[in-house]
Amino acid sequence: MSTEPTSPPPPPQLIHGSLIPALPDDLAIHCIALLPRAAHPTLALVSRALHALLCHHPEPLLAARRALRLSDSHIILSLRPPSSASLLFFLLLPHPGWPPLPLPSPPVAVSPSSSVATDGSRLFLIGGSVAGVPAASVQILDPRARSWSIGPRLSSTREFAAGVAHSGVLYVAGGCVPSSPFWAEALDLSTSDAKWKTVASPIHLREKWMHGCASLAGKVLAVADRGGLAYDPATPPAEAWAPVSPVLDMGWKGRAAVVQGILYSYDYLGQVKGYDPDTDSWSTVEGLERELPRFLCGATLANVGGLLYLVWEGKWKGKVKEEMRSMVVIEWAGIEVTTAEEGRLRGKVISRDTVLFPGVPKGSTITHCIALDL
Image (cartoon, rainbow, N blue to C red):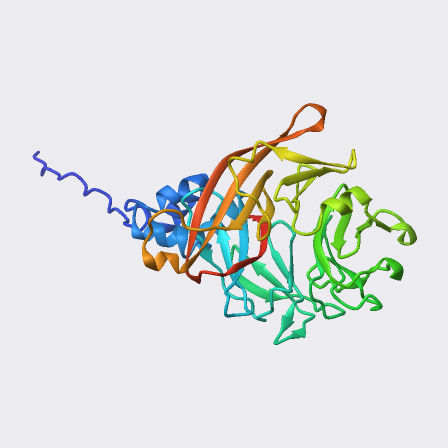
C-alpha cells in the first residue's frame, strides 16, 4: 500500500511589531519595561518606533512598569519663559543623554507663585495666581498618564505657600494673610473624597510668605522671611508648632532637599551645606569646589533615589549652532554624599549632564524642581 508523500507543515507565521519585529508590541513593551531606565537613552537610538515610545509617548511603558512594580526616580521640572507667566512642565530621567519629555500644561494656568509637593508618585500644584488674582486651586499631575486633574479647593487663596506631603497627609501653610483662620490646613491623601481640614496654629508665629518647606525628623519645616517654623503632627495641638532652631534658621533661606535625614541647601557664598537635626549643626559638603559652579541663585535641589541632585540654569560653552543658543540650557549633577570623621560631609559627583530644551527660549527660569518615582 503506497502513501502519498507529505509535505512539511508550513512554518508558523511571524507576528511583526513596530518595536521588536518578531514580537507583538504589547509583549515588546513588557520586555522593554524589564530593562533598567538607565538603558533607555541608548535604546531610543535604535529605531524611530523605540524613540517615539521612550521619548514622546511613554504611557504604555510606564503602565507596564507599574504593573511589574518597577519604578525609578524622575525629576519634574517647571520653567517660566521670559515673556509668559504660565509654566511649562517637563519630565527628566536623571541619566546622561536623556532628553526632556514635555508634559501637558495644567488646566489652570497659575503663576510661579504656586507651590509644589509630591506623595511619591503624583505632583500637587498648590495655589498661585491667575491674572494677578491669588488662586485656591489644587491641581494634581499623574506623570504616568501624563494628565492633570483638579483636587479639592483650598479653604483660602494662596501665593508662595509652604507645601509638603508628610506621612500620607498634604500640609499647606502661609501664602495668605496671617490672620486667616485657614492659615494652615491639611489633606488626607489616603482617601479620594477627602476635604481640607484646618490645622490650628498660634497667630504670633504665623508669617505670610514662605520660601521653603521640607519634611525632616518627623516634623514639617517651613522657612519664612523672619524665622522658620516646625510642626509636629504627633504632639498635642497646643504644642505642635514651635520656631526652628536659630542654627537651622540662619543657614536655610530658600530651596532645599532632604536626603538620608540631612537637609541640604546652599548659602550666600554658593556653598552646598547639610544640616543634621541630631547635632543641630551645618556642615559644608566638601569635594565639590572644582566640579560644580558656585550657586549664588537659581539652583534647585532634589532627593533623587537617595542621591542629592542639583539642577541649575546653565550656559553653552564652546562653539554651538546659532539656533541652539536661543534655547534654554539646564544642567544637573547627581551627588553621593558620605559622612566622614567628626560628622564632616564629603560629596562626589557621580553623574552630570547638560540638557537642551527645544522650543523653550533662552532666559527661561526654573520655578519648581521635585523628584518622584515612576
